[in-house]
Image 1 (cartoon, rainbow, N blue to C red):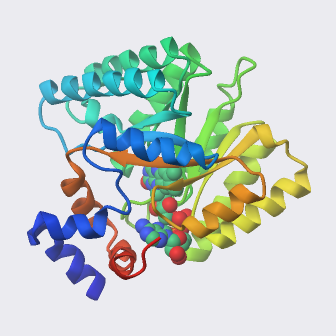
Image 2 (tube, rainbow, N blue to C red):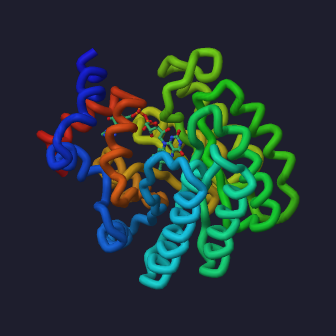
Image 3 (cartoon, protein in one colour):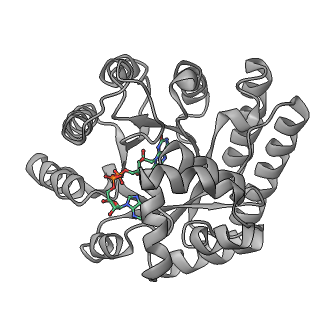
Length: 303
Ligand SMILES: Cc1cc2nc3c(=O)[nH]c(=O)nc-3n(C[C@H](O)[C@H](O)[C@H](O)COP(=O)(O)OP(=O)(O)OC[C@H]3O[C@@H](n4cnc5c(N)ncnc54)[C@H](O)[C@@H]3O)c2cc1C
């Protein structure tokens, strides 16, 4: 209840106050801020995936603008030698306005990534976007297999079936590349599993399926139980370290992150930055009020 109340009133609080809560989770507003955060992580032996924060868009011009910003970001971050790749949300490229234009925008961004020998991860958004985001992945995986990956949400009831279907598109030597996460959006019960136990059970089931089907996996979680379970599965199956990595969000559970890095596993941190951090923070908090309590905690416990 309290989380919900806090989350709902956040958009009306002064921006400066929200920044105190948000700065632990967002690298800043500018490309320079993003570069600084990425360099610091790289120096700790951690790779990054860079995300430009965006508000919901309502015009094709805004989609075009976002495409150009991403192209500039890829140019800058690769030329500065940042070790990492890029994540994008298709709705920022016009997915809910015009699918064809969205596909064309994303292809231009992927082409830039190909030119710079980099990689684009298609983030998975709420359930109304899942079919189109699977289509985007299917289309571009065939054309640019080593340069594009998708996010899989373990909480969706449909996911195992999607994975089985996706496993059939594997036609060449490059493994399919997925980030496996729980899923962050509030979905109805007929679409998503709701309890912690159910979500974890399906997360591990999906992980097993992906490992058995030679997919590359970004194990994206801050949940100690899932990290430990994933490591047990990896050891039991004797999976080579080149076949997976761990992924976490910027500023979240740094102790767990360090302990994974110290054990010699590859870690990638999702680094969001951009002028739209305010809308992003408050919307995310409304979507998942549980996170409000983490943000409140972050005010008191630093580092
Ligand atoms: C790299 C990455 C990319 C992602 N991409 C997507 C995506 O494309 N689509 C999508 O739907 N979801 C995405 N997510 C979000 C994901 O679906 C989960 O909602 C999120 O990771 C929380 O789940 P968890 O597995 O960490 O477990 P939880 O049970 O939520 O968290 C485990 C523990 O981590 C800590 N923790 C979690 N969140 C926070 C926080 N904000 N602040 C402080 N501590 C925290 C707490 O100690 C908590 O007990 C992504 C997550 C990561 C790590």
